[in-house]
Image 1 (cartoon, rainbow, N blue to C red):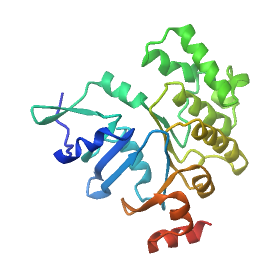
Image 2: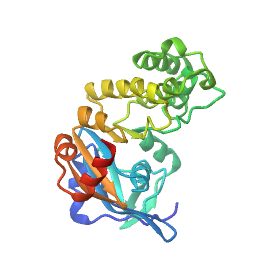
Image 3: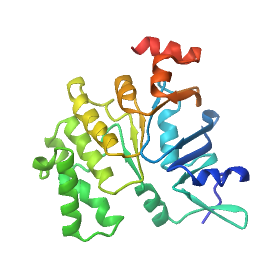
Image 4: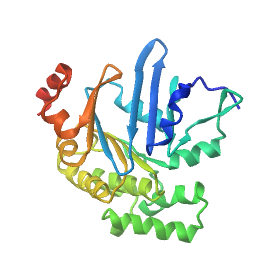
Length: 269
């Protein structure tokens, strides 16, 4: 194991135990380019939080740091009180073994812009694969679980289709099913409709709205302001690698207090 350059202020360890998801003081740079500066976000059980902002504001990098697809340079992430990606031993933070990180990531289902499905596998096999590899579920049980979740997103009749045989919206619904099948504590969406043709956006947003209605905890990076307004409990506006404003969605999207938020929203409404 190797030392990871992550830190958290001791007084915040107790508060980090409370929310379903807690990201505290996240910092990230790529060489000399600073992408995130001191970004913190707590998400309670059943809450839907949308993150909006201009391209290059750090939204997707923040989401990837939460899931440890990118290792933060500073700060820490907890899911239901368990620190993600590292553990403290004798005052030093060490990387967790890869198997532990895989389990932790499974608790944070990730839905990507470009679906990230395996092209050689059918829809049902794409969903069942992680169930077998990460959760060690027997093949038949994993298949049954996959079919059940595909049905919940309206994709059961396409279970035998490969990604090349599906529309973009259908592929994204399979990707959502793959994440949901793992029974995650929180679902992370990285601009899930940005790669879709406009007529396919609604079918994906409808599935996401249904998940929110079922009480799924969700963090959604999105440009879909209508979805944020109608579905999310809270909206976070990011710019320049920092959180500029956050609050109840009706307030932030309807009557933002920060000039930068107002300027951004005026251009996309």
